[in-house]
Picture 1 (cartoon, rainbow, N blue to C red):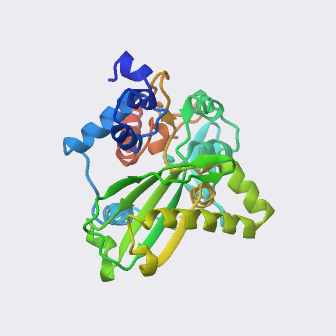
Picture 2 (cartoon, one colour):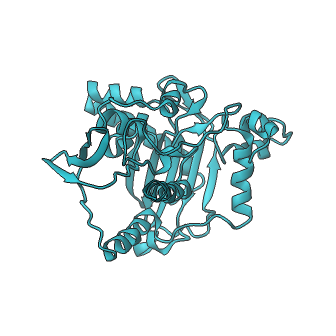
Length: 330
């Protein structure tokens, strides 16, 4: 467990103690500056100890292997189906309803692994409250939303000579809704053959972006204005990558930009977040108990019930949900 000192000191405050501007810039790319400093130590320790890894083929291949195992055990998947409601009868979760079909799909247990805001206010209709989540929705200064705009670039070139992770600081920031974006968190993927088919490579850029309401309003007012703003942002990213990746000058074949609004559209996530809430410094660490008061046979899983979230925590919460079911059955 983190000690009191590392819990009360933010990453940004810890980094500021270094005299070297190079070290300060390097560490600033690792984790969010408002998180407790132990998050930086944990991240660096995981990487340097060899305890962290990359799933070959990326998330799609990983999900595909889970699907194969699930179906081999007799599981049935309803793919590309949007759930509209979790059915509650006399305080017991009895099934779900799909948006395309009013018929109920019965279930002995419901294990939602989705965004908590979507669960509470969309699937449960706002009828049930959770102090754990309400505190995170209503205190953004203490609980950080993991939202970003992602820029993906497909280039017909070999990038195997580049490091997997780079941090680039442009000379001029991009001004988005009055806020400066002044850092490009860049990744290349030539270490994985699944991303280099046909002599092509992938570059992704993560831009910290908490302007969900701005993107939403812009899209509602004008789809064209929304598209132009994305293109303006993409052009700025490419311009500042060119000194490092000159191949983008004449070998760029694909550009795809996903704003927080994109994540909300496809995943129903709160404010377009791609991970769970990040704990701020001087905030007591809490783990969700995986239940919603007043509902039996509903057990929460997924990254949204774990501080910071991410794939490892999502897997662990699935295990915890099953353990809770077994404990309550015995």
